[in-house]
Length: 293
Image (cartoon, rainbow, N blue to C red; front, side):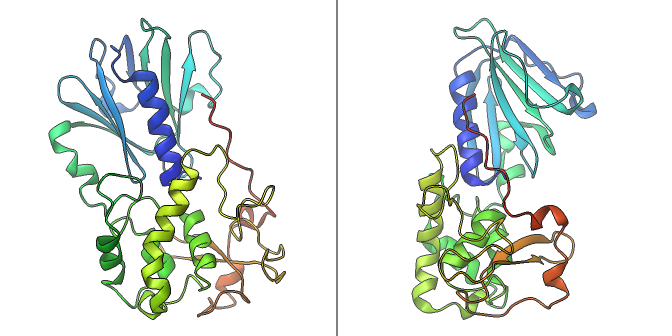
């Protein structure tokens, strides 16, 4: 699942493949930009911002993309078979085939694809809070943002990218477990020692995983995550079966995992705790693919 660490890795691969190189081919496969051609422009850099990617090219233009739940960027060498998905799922292609080595970047299933003036990037990312993996990171500002609505459940507050940028559903569930509170606890009710620890721990988790091919929050070989994706499996701390429930405002509910014994605080209603989609009740999601491209 793409979160801040995944986006950081993607930006690094794209930057390594394209930055400083002249595009020999570009193809935007969305109606709005069907006539856009960036051929002949040099890619200046690829920068992550929370869960967003900003690919800046010569001439003051930025290709803005977001991976959403299922999107991905793949980088292919010359003559390498494209394996990221069927052709109809491709949204954009950027290639520097005259470079050595030649590289082609292909964006699949991207729910967001925009072409912006670089000077107007704030239209796309200006609303974001401090980036956990970015140069603008400020734990004090992030914590102030989170506490601005003390009655809000901590799980919802962590997912709100306006508070701090980069946390997704996996890290939300894992952070709450590490803090020993349920995701439904109002953030204003978080014990003082945990409140101060929250932004520090969040940054540590993402920084630790940004260079890893497989995300881990446990430090245990073969047991990568404490609660996420482990519904009905025994808690790694106390052996109580992990539970799952939907959490959100109704329009964007997300499956949320917690240990009812290790984590203190409110729990969802019994009805809600059994409404997670079947795919979220599997014993364990497949681990992220190794980022070899």
